[in-house]
Structures are given as C-alpha cells and as structure tokens.
Length: 125
Image 1 (cartoon, helix red, strand yellow):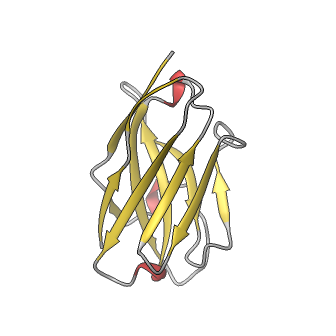
Image 2 (image 1 turned 45 degrees about the vertical axis):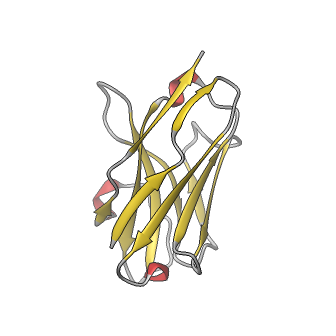
C-alpha cells in the first residue's frame, strides 16, 4: 500500500490543522492505521491509531482532548484533526499502515508495515 500525507503547514499556537492520509494499493479496510511524529533531535513517537473498522481509536496522552483520528474506508483516507495546537506539536507527521487480521489500534512502531513520506507541521508560539 502507498501512503501520502497532506494538510500540513504553519499555524499559530492555539490553532487547528487537519492532516489527511490517502492510501492506494491493497484494500484499505484491511489495515489498521496510525499517526506518528518526529521532532528534530527526537525519536519518532506515537500520536494516534485507529482500527480497521474504525471502532477502536487510541491517542497518546499528550494529544488527548486536542486531537481526533478518523477514517473513511470508502475513500481510502485516514484523518488526524489537530486542535489547540502547541509549539511542542511541531514535528514531521507520518501516516502508517498495520496489516493484521485483527481489528486493533496499536501504538508500537514495530507493528506498522508501510509508512508515508511524512509532512511538516510547524506551530509558532
């Protein structure tokens, strides 16, 4: 599966951005999906995940109450809505696909088989 992120950019603290990940190739609904981010000089970290069906979501503590994750299996997209953005949310954001028979939302990078190229999100304070 190929993954392409869009929607990144520059926003002021307190603002909102919506990231979209478009998938092509294998049947999108067979993948659990995740969002990760990597800031300069830091390791890649988990942000959000959503199961194949969309019934289960999982958010990192640092973004709970501010970010939501959703998916549209008809249009092969997964969305990350980011509200109340903070300077510490600045990072390159990656979409990833977890191919498994299970309907789960997982945070560990080792489960993810495919990754997008990443997109920059910059929050100015």
